[in-house]
Amino acid sequence: MDNIICIAGPTASGKTALAVALAKELDGEVVSCDSMQIYRHMDIGTAKPTTEEMQGIPHHMLDVADPQEEFSVSRYCEMADPIIKDILNRGKTAIIAGGTGLYMDSLIRGNRFAPCPSTGMREKLEAQADAQGMQAMLDLLYSIDPEAASKLHLADRKRILRALEVFYETGKTMTAHNLETQALPSRYHPLWIGLEDADRSTLYHRIDRRVEQMLQDGLIDEIKALLARGISEKCTAMQAIGYKEFLDALAGRCSIEDAVSHVQQASRHYAKRQLTWFRRNSAMHWLTREDGDGIHEILAKARQVLWEIDN
Image (cartoon, rainbow, N blue to C red):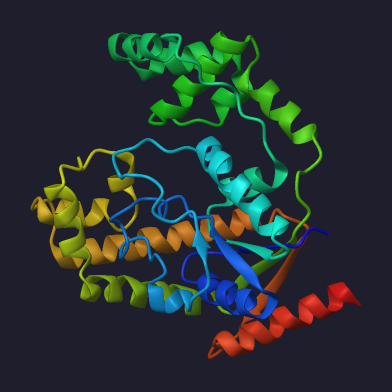
């Protein structure tokens, strides 16, 4: 087993606190695995750890992109993998913590990603989609790669066009490419730790409180500052949970109170999807958080897992 610990779980489950606590005990550094915390100037709405919460532990993969940039799982892996190697080469423990399952799994497996050459194919497909509509593009994908097409919604323009681009650029379907990648042995062999609540309603209550705290901490001002920087509300980063809802409120499309409710509901649904994703991992050691458990109780459970692995 590599000197790597992956801490996974839903939003507001306590991943950051556990990552910092283990890093302090194991001479580790934290590598964030959150698809939104990569963006600069987006701190409150992404629950990015504060300097106080980091407690002097180095944190990587925070603030590595501007909000208007298009970011991808392949770019995340390209940036994070050398960081992990550097941490390990210095004899330290790499603690990968976050809730973006696709990023975490891809990083650990060492996925090979289909190339994105600048041949003009992407632009050609974009123009075709504008002219013919996304139903025509999805139908085209069904004729080429029905398995990939069946997993995509008509509104998922980006992934539909990407699947078509991969086929036209490589001659292989996205399905074939993914199967080849999954057949490769994993690059790393970490200890997997998952956080869950004994009572799902406790997690949901904590999520609701976190959203209310974000508002008190100045989330509205953070969003206004992003808009003042010229960040379009249509860019991918601004469509994240916690931003798009309050953009609607600022534009008068709903009230602040309605926006809070929408963020809470979307966050609860997201937490459910995260748990579904991580529960597919048979190597996960689940730590069950009882009502009232704080970081000391969770850390004690993590220590027990570490002891069992070592013995």
